[in-house]
Length: 110
Image (cartoon, rainbow, N blue to C red; front, side):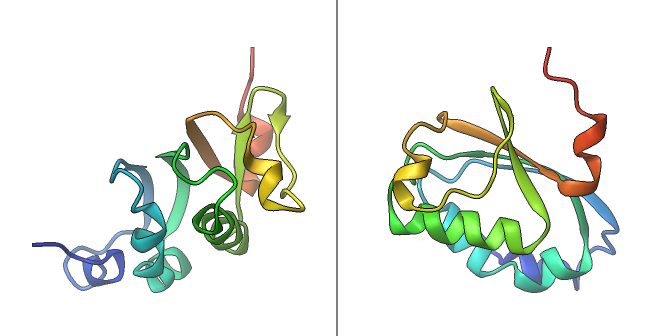
């Protein structure tokens, strides 16, 4: 049995969250069922596996979805601009931390 992120809105009054997703290549499906959730809940941090999405259409969907919801990836070199093509994600690490854009200045990459 599964539940959509959007369905959680009727169960618990989330205001602010940190999310860790580990669904073995089905992250895009999670986001497809989370449009309302990401619009109504302040998601400050999101940790997800990206290795299955590098250079794939699902990766482009994930990147577009998270950028649309004001999330940016934190990579070794700092904040990453939105890749201009799918190949731009090929060098991304297996796990990617996304942060709400407004919180970027509070992150230290030492």
